[in-house]
Image (cartoon, rainbow, N blue to C red; front, side, top):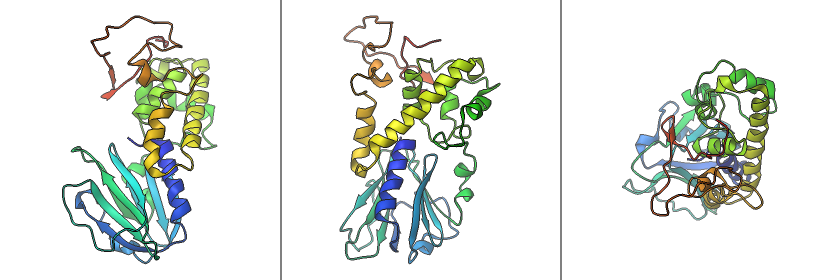
Length: 289
C-alpha cells in the first residue's frame, strides 16, 4: 500500500508536471472508484491545475475549481504518461480505473490503475478536501512542524492499544501504514505489541525521533524518482543500505544483525508472521517487550 513517502513523491511528480496546465478530459473507466457525484468529474475539465499535495495517504490535485482527491488503497497506483490516446478507454477487466488527460500537443496526463481482486481505490471530486470523510478524520501529519514530541506524547497518553495499531490509526497520526510502522518500531527496538499507554517518556522520545527520521529519509529517497520506480525504491529502502541494520521484512526471513536473538531457523519452514490489528507484522525478536 502506498504510504506517506510514496504519496508525497507522487504529489511532487504532479506538482512538477501538471501545475499550470489545463485539464482536457477526465475519463472514468471503473465507475466503482467514484465516491462523489456533485460536482461531477466533468467539472474538472477546462480547469487549470493550481497545486498538488497530500493529506495523509490521500493525493490532492487542486484546480481553480474543484479538487480531485485520490486514495490509492492497497493496490492502486498513478502512472504518468506522455502520448495518451485521445479516444476514451473502453471499460474492461484490466487495471485501468481512470484517465486524466491534460491539454497540449504532448497529450500527457496520468492513469489511475488498480491491480488484484480486492478493490479499494477511491476517487473524489470535491469543492474542498475536507469534504472527503477520510480526510476530515485525519490526525496530525508526522512531518508537520507543529507535530512536536509533546503533541505525540499527548496522543499516546492513556491509549491502551498496541503501539503498532496506534501508529497505523489515521485518526491518530496521518500517513503511516503497515510497512512503515514495522520499519519505525524496528529502528526504535520496540515490540509492536507494547501498549501505547505503557511507554515511558524516554521510549516516547526515542519513538518520536525515529518516526520522523524514518519518514524523512524515505521521502528524500523517493524525491525525483519516476512514478514507476517508487515501489522498487520502497522495497529496496526497507532492506536497509549498509551499514544500517536489517529491516523487519528481512528480519522475518533471517536473523537480524542488530538482533540479540539469533536463533537458527529451519531452512524448510518459513517463519511465522504475527498479525497485529489484522495486518502482517514483521517484528524483530530482539526488540523490547
